[in-house]
Image (cartoon, rainbow, N blue to C red; front, side, top):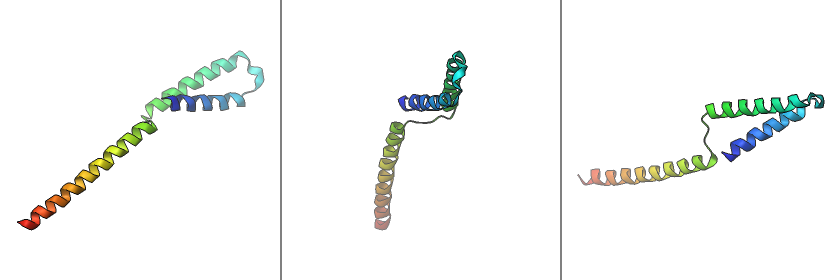
Length: 81
């Protein structure tokens, strides 16, 4: 989640830097609107964090190893019959 927040902050800062300095108070309103819009857009994308991705990758690797071991055992059993 912190990564998403940092990303939103970075994008907001870049957009804010591109605005003319004479906007004054409107700048804060625009910043708030952009942050809200970005947070909403990112939440709809159903993104996962790097940590979640790494955990699922490890689970998949263990499952693949177990499947390969079971396939090898099945092959041995089939050869015996």
